[in-house]
Length: 107
Image 1: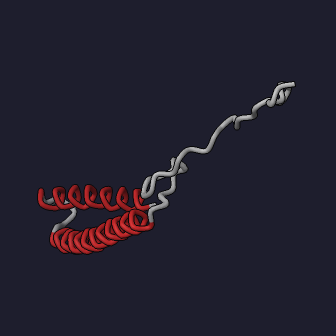
Image 2: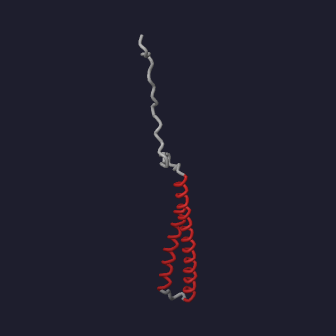
Image 3: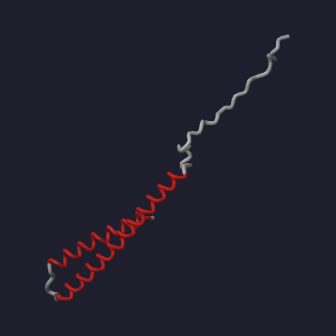
């Protein structure tokens, strides 16, 4: 008889665990590094704040343009239409579309 049993099989795991690298993402889509996660959250908050400030500014400008358009339309009669009125209406339309896009992107 030999000192080693011959009929025992050596078992190895099918998928051995990968070594963990400190500070690196483990590929599960979530950063395990709290500093990186915190930085990403701060960047996201900053972007949301900037987007909100831009929306406020754009809607304020939209209101001012609409008010100006109304004042100019009130000055005209049924037979005249100012070129400024048409340009202002186009500007309002463009700004309104931009505001709508920013709101849609925020969701």
